[in-house]
Length: 144
Image (cartoon, one colour):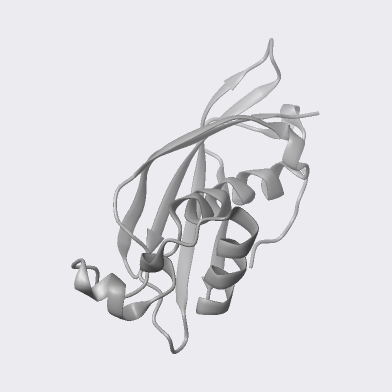
């Protein structure tokens, strides 16, 4: 679970670390996300189908994983609207076992600051079970 904070632009420096967030993902979360998003692809919901296509288990929706990482930047800023740009590449799936679920860990580092725009560019490192699941995850956050 992530914790919400709020930072001011004047207090941010290149190299600053964001608090690491741990997001737990369960099969119930996958069902709820499938309903909310309309993405009911069985690789996210049916273990037999997921394994039949070579996956280790059902997998979290890519956009769910991306959203969890983006939430970490929003929490750091103290406002979801502060995230003005966000992009990533999907590098590995997040397998979600029936028992215990999975954990997505997100760490972040301030890579750049722009005084004119009052923004901080944050590089996010996103892993699950020790595997990098998002690559080149980067958010630009406007700060007060």
